[in-house]
Length: 65
Image (cartoon, rainbow, N blue to C red; front, side, top):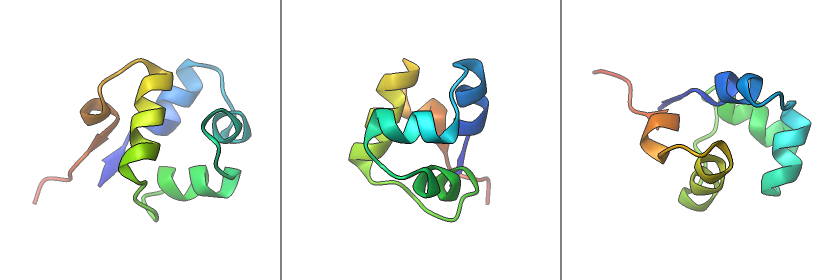
């Protein structure tokens, strides 16, 4: 799964630590999600989508096979 979290963080002028604090996870979790090493729970994905005011399917998407 791919995501555009890093892009959206930059657009909203947030550090990984800022985003982590706002959604209640560690900065390391944000880093792992951005790098595609960790797939977030549905709840976490929804929290990020709400924070960035965008549909979750625009924030996260499947890679083409």
